[in-house]
Image 1: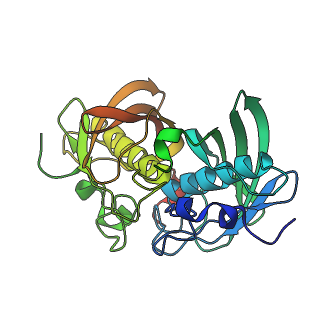
Image 2 (image 1 turned 90 degrees about the vertical axis):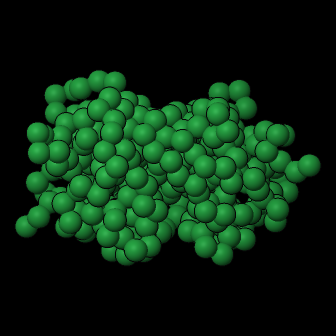
Length: 150
Length: 150
């Protein structure tokens, strides 16, 4: 496993994402490490990322599924130079299996479960205190030319 | 249609949600108006809510689906006193149909499409510049006692 997060190997001009871009000063800075088989990460929501008192906001968990899933797709498809192609989210699904406590560090694990042509389907699990709290799925697609550089 | 957003009629001690709670100073303050048949709202993402340059972050759109969908479920189930019961998100799905431009105000429309026992399924559409950009679905469930007040 490399110590450099997948998101830090995205091209500089495509590193502004609110969820995970290293060039977004206000962003969440979600980071994914690729171990050759799965994407792993850790994230501690801030106190304001609350849903009901004591629990993490679902939109925050959806953001973790999104950025961690897409980075895992990108890393799984990286070329020999190790530089991940930029993927975007075609669809996102999250099942909130049980409440996620606000405070403890969250553990993220993601695996590629299917390839559909150029699309990559990734499953993401979010755990807290040793229990899976949310399970999500991202369909990641290569960045369309219309969203890229001029 | 009442001018008071659904989220401003939630109980004070359940109004801290990062997405829509009026008592969260750092939050997004997503607001839903219930017209008796559907939930409608408007939201303009901030410049930092970027995905790739020029486009809105998917996790931001998922947050809009989440809070707007759950508020629509709550409003649709409100009693004669008009006070909505607090619902939580059991699952969330978003299809990103086409890129969402960052800058223009977004329009939100949500409708109840199914009832499954005490759960309410809501479809949410997010439009920008007159075109639907994302379509989502929320399964909302009454707040479990384990997440509520002591």
